[in-house]
Amino acid sequence: MGPILPPGLHFHLTWSRSLRSQHEIDELNEIGSLLSNLHLSNSHDTWDCYLNHSHGFSVNLIRKHIIHQSHNLPSQLFKWNNLVPIKVNINTWRILNQRMPTRINLDYRGIDLNSVRCPICDEDVETEDHIFVHCNLARKIWKDVLLWWKVDNINVLSLLEAINLLDKVSLPPPLFALFDAVVQATLWFLWRYRNEFAFSPKIPNLDLLFNDIKLFFF
Image 1 (cartoon, rainbow, N blue to C red):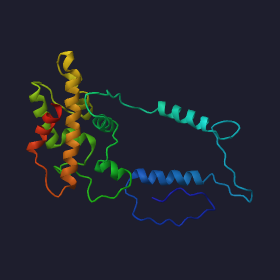
Image 2 (image 1 turned 90 degrees about the horizontal axis):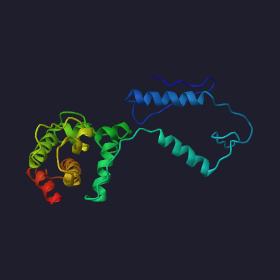
Image 3 (image 1 turned 120 degrees about the vertical axis):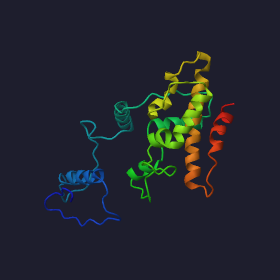
Image 4 (image 1 turned 90 degrees about the vertical axis):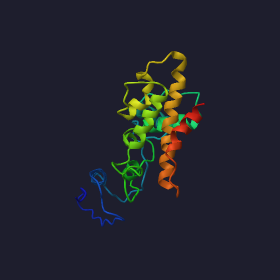
């Protein structure tokens, strides 16, 4: 499990904790591979930017490089809704792009937790898909929301389906933005309930969750 180290260089590695995943091992091996190209000399150190032939640095060059790399990143289209507060739109965007501080995301970034399982049902690891779709709480709330809007024969099976639920329902155009506001509010209140359940000394009242969504909408 040791890293690939360059010949002639010796490292004494000490860890605050042991490596826990193949991803961390791969990162360590990648660092070792980079060090294998290291050649030390007695000359003065210099900084080179290899984005152009002159090896010179400029802010404009870095900006163009970042924009080019960003265009190559996969991303999901997000429909901004002006009927809900900015914080609710941002919350939906973060959920869509898996930027929420769920337990599995925190663990992936090296933050030690006692458990990565869902704090509400403890039946699976806490991912965005689980907390917003597959958890028993989420399934119940989505069922209540669809019944409230008299939407039949639709099951929310994935996070992408939940966020794009408007594409699956038959509603008149004037109600499109309103129903999307309800979807985003549902995601917002599910996350708020999760935080209260995980961090509040008092367990929040589940019966009030759906009422909070309707009150927010009205």
